[in-house]
Image (cartoon, rainbow, N blue to C red; front, side, top):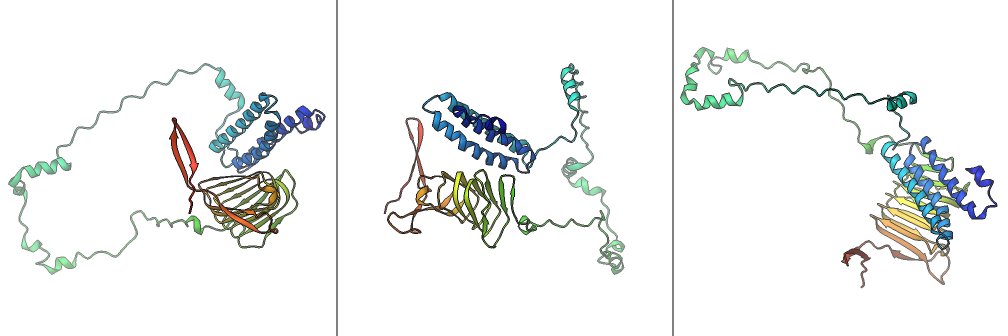
Length: 356
């Protein structure tokens, strides 16, 4: 794919298409990743960047190009769904698989007749008339006849009349349990499990920042436009990202701050309460999901940013004040309350604004 793209740079009408395909081809690399679904999502963000450029260029010229880009995007979405269902933690192999030749031979051969049905279950045993609950009720219905078979206890057999009998009925000391097995120790809860080692390294085109807590600020300076920064499981940590990167993700972090210059695709924040994000240049989109409390600081160059939220609360966007010096912001709260009404058989949702 890379050779095809490099060899056709002069084809201006198709070079963007080749770039789009070359980026999408990298998705097949999920087979060597331990978190393939996350990898596909990261790669799709890069693919969407070039796909959006194609849509913008061809939407008024030829809709076939737009449909082609959208269809390709659906293929990547379906690939991610497949991986999430069958290979969530990496490529899974069938330990009891057979050779390809044998599998193809079994398909070509005629299907064997189905095995005969199993024999019918044995008939239920006849109901017992001498025991169980039925026997108890049968004895009760006999009335006084039940006591005829009882005999009177002799005085010599009464324990309260003979201390010697009581002395012989002492309870033995505790001995080994019937099973002879020791009880299983309860496992530690997840909260008390061992702390995972911190990670700060570049793997391929992805920066991995994981499990950092209460440390000094981490600075990523050796970046490229194709790099993706993944921040996971951090707490009370500040991450500074220099230059322009493709995308930034913040997942399962607490009280984590991210300072980034420019992002090509988007910044995604998931389950990261009390976060802070500051963009000093540009970012086209910020997506926030399942997060409570967060502060976003935008620059004058990023006022066209699109911000989407889902299952979030207490998210504030700080915008630079026109005419003021650098660093003066005005805080704006992201709407949390929505109102839905039915109009002409359709559900129409609007933001509820409080005045006063």
